[in-house]
Length: 223
Image (tube, rainbow, N blue to C red):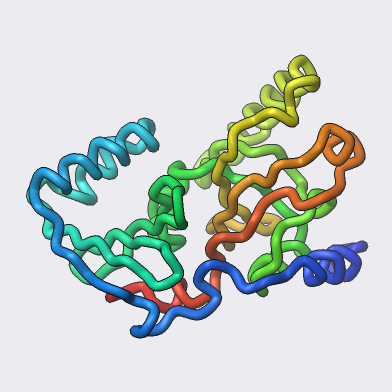
């Protein structure tokens, strides 16, 4: 284990709480509805607007006449299911987020953040992500050209330095977490709101864990 990993694991585990899909069984599903053609088109347009760089891939994934199902869960989350495969999930009042298996196929759907090994272990146990375990700024994950990630990360750091005073006022954003040297994401999370002092001191909850490898939704890939 890398130096300090045990420390991060302990700190992160102290923030652990049941995530949205920590448990997912047949009883979690409240109802399943087959969407009308007009509803499918509306969802497609929404996905294209949310993930413009992936429009071509999403259009192929969900054709206009797809038999898309909307699953409402008792935890107030919703799922989009096609051919029994869970493609997207949406926590209450959230945008559609890719299931981790879909993110593994289309990593460009969400910005990537690299975290240390101890943090990755804790996140996969359901913990929220604490700021000290973060090793990179959000960037576009490119498994074929990792050198591009470094360039983009450096550019983003420069931009942040220029706009440091407004850093605490960002909108809530969604990201994916990658362990060191990993080519697939281990979790999906929502950036937490932090005070300017927490940002300056690099402390506090960096992101709230929404889905991770090993949770209930990960094991419930088909419905």
